[in-house]
Amino acid sequence: MPVAATVLAFTPALRPLLLSGVLPLLVIYLTEVVSEKREMSIVAEERERRRIQRTHQRVQQDDTDDALARLREQARVQREQRKKEVMDRLVQILSEAPNTPVTAIAEQLNISRTTVYNYLRELEEAGRIRRNGSVHVMA
Image (cartoon, rainbow, N blue to C red):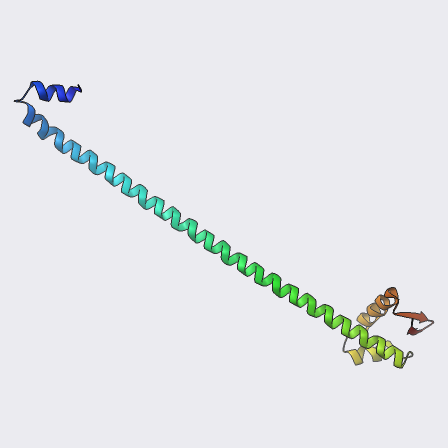
């Protein structure tokens, strides 16, 4: 039998006195326990709210990254298509007039002379045209 129960059992006259001293202490203790649990609950809720917020931010960032990747891919495909169209047009110009100066080709295609030289080199490497002196002819 616990000590408190023993004291209460053997001293009926002291029972009201002991209860009047112990009861307020018990109420204070329980109030503290409940208060701590409530504070812990509030802290846990705040942590969970921040975790959810970080998760949402990551999802939004992933969506943004995916959208940027799609836009970059679309831009890359468009550049490749434009380059193919320009190179095909360059081959057509050379087939119609092999002696056309690079400056005139650049003006017709609306690209720089350097780009024309690069495209001519690529077309030569691909075997679509070949150089015959200063003239490019179909391969």
